[in-house]
Image (cartoon, rainbow, N blue to C red; front, side, top):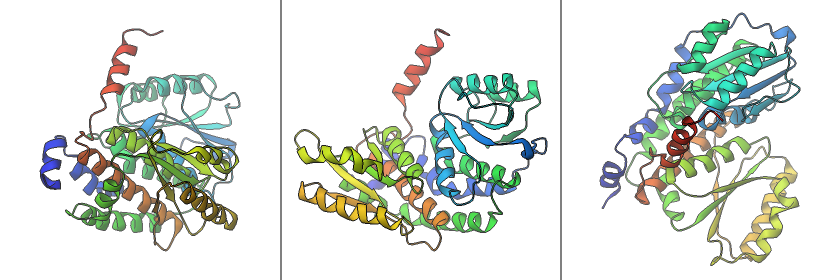
Length: 348
């Protein structure tokens, strides 16, 4: 069966076209109008994005994207409660694509009680109702996507919010470059023989172990790992350099493919600190000596901000094709839906 027939068979919700048209989500954010003028930035000492899954990963990626510009702490909260330091000097970004994520709703209500400044990013649901009740500013997202497939509308809405509040500089040049790149790469990765499909084929029968660099590509690594989990229905693991060098590196000393049939994927970028680059080189030698096959993901773009999204888009397609050639529906999230149904039976 060729790849086109496999896509027709295993992708009934047509996420294939959603991926091709990811650039349209970016275009939507450029045209989207919302008012966040009520936020008093002079009082803000830290920012917390609270969300889960596909609605939280934009925060991880944003910290990589804006690592050289942000001058106040920015953290991602994935829980029912907020960190103890959160107070009236905190900007809370409540991010829930559906608007009904119970952990996010709980944290947002706590943010109201703590008199934080709050911006909601959502399509509707109970979060939009909460925003209306307390007169909170809202950046409305376009409906119709599964949250993880709405990544582009989420991350570029977040970038626009941070830009509007002057926490980062004007980003329109980078955004236009990313949008053009994604539009072009969508045509490349949708062809029958393409780099993303070839990469996915190399992962068949293996558990991906993904290594990135802390603060540079850690959000990319998290995104890739989660996409393999949800799209490909496969375990995957992610860690960052240099932390991995102080613990996990030892685990490879006893590597045995009959016990852990893994391939390592290294996410590389030319802007990594020189010592991190050297660490990647040394670890590659160690892993090769242990018989571990290493695959590399890297972008050749002119600017880090563009390269970051280039790699995210490539790895999204890898996870999609890995689902298809494994005979899995890249839309299905059976265990997550079951968990939500069981939780809905009780509020305790």
